[in-house]
Length: 508
Image (cartoon, rainbow, N blue to C red):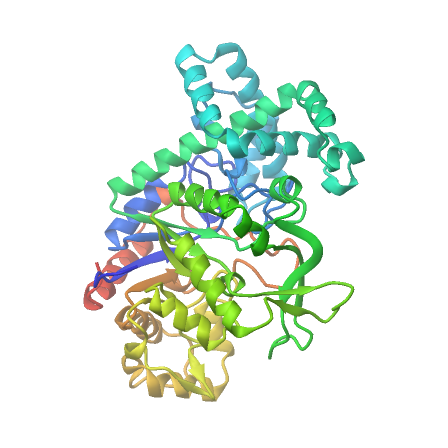
């Protein structure tokens, strides 16, 4: 991202947006009030988490069932092509889900599934000719990925949502006769999955229009890899290979590294096909967003994989010159016609950051981590082409971090950040301390500044605790309703305060 325009924005997952009319989870109809608040706060960017389809009833946005498309969970049922009515029992469920402090997926998933199925049945009977034509034209245009995805999803349901390699062999191995028979047998379910993607994309484009009208850019999150049990791994087994498992090497946080159990990219095989799949994926993502956060950027330089021969792991490719050349090639490809941010957190070799710098692609400066040997980097000395932030969706909130920080950490921050001058390292998380920390981010030399919603509102509830699975992850919801963000005194005053910090930081 080039130029001298200093932008700032807010990180908030879509599922976290609370609306007066949602069904207990943020959806594509929940955002107008949020965009209005962003405008009042002078925020020009909304960063969200992946919106891709996920595994059946899996709330993790990184449990990706496809590299293409959108998650039907986020469809606004009120905006379906043909209206559907809620039963009395469903209205009671909605009230319970809306009243919850967190997302109640146990209520939301079955409720939305029932309503969307009724919506499709109503569309088949009552959809207008214009709607049907629009649907058919769109489906033909998306055929290259949509046909296989819809078939995969229908087959997954038919097989009890078991992994595709546990399906009958002719289907798991994509034998032509078996696929043709399945397309005929499951035609209605395939049509339903196709319709869901059409509805989701039409609604998302309305969100894009709302954001443009509010002067807000949308930054999406593009996971590095796709799940083993995904349409892409099923269709392209030579590209997303399952003969080894992707992870990360040992570091200060994990002596044995991490085994993610994900497939790995065979970039040599992709190159032989002129990267057609990777290019298509990048182009589709670019059609959804103004800016893309490319997750696990180091993976495009080198992958750490484990298999029976190397159970402790190895790099692919193994030598630094090859890794450097590969990363440069991939990031030139990924950034064609699109603006990206490279998520370069974790153990990143210097040559990878050198390549990103040469390509003028911003990496991350997480302020609490931007240090070496206990010495923090002066925020005014961050690279201009970078994104500064107080935290990510995987970290504890700013308030929780400060309250749990070691005394030396607090003292080092106060000593290094000019905006923190005069703060007491032994004090709690006061209003003046909060102001100084956010002001430090706004005043940083990074062109991009993104603040997590919880850090703006001095909260301690986090989005995700890495390395854990359970009902505490991916359930965070903002407390106020989006429609009331500027009518409520607290949220209105916070917007004014953030606007002032933004102005003082010379950000747009």
